[in-house]
Image 1 (cartoon, helix red, strand yellow):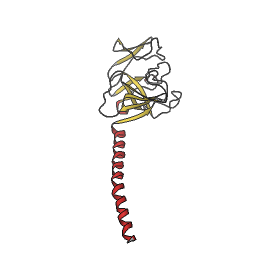
Image 2 (image 1 turned 180 degrees about the vertical axis):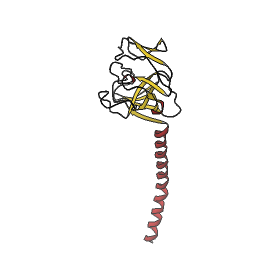
Image 3 (image 1 turned 45 degrees about the horizontal axis):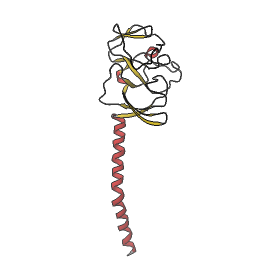
Length: 189
């Protein structure tokens, strides 16, 4: 009789555990697919986007169905023109900057003002009186590329140093800060 009780107990445990294993497997699969194709978290390593994004912030990036426009904050793979040593402290595979120039636009700077096709670019996200730092030479952004800059212009290593960001290298657009200074926050863009 003891021999018959053991298989029934094992079968009972299997009936209870197997559905949970299946649910867990589906949940992990969905999480992996979401991260790969829909939304992903990123860590902000530097102050180049200060005060909009701060060092240590955790951000959510939309990876599918996003639109890049002037002023969009994007995450992108390190651009082809970047060389180690161009920028102090920049050794990340993915970078985050603001789109300033779109394909076909002519961009340059006049003093601390960014000019796009002959008009001053309104930049309400910048701190008042912030110097531009390195000037922008007059150039037309090629088709399929973006000109990007950090919001902390004097210290930002950006398109002024390593050139354009190819559209194919854009991972997605930032839409939410979820963590700042060791606490959850929900700041949208």
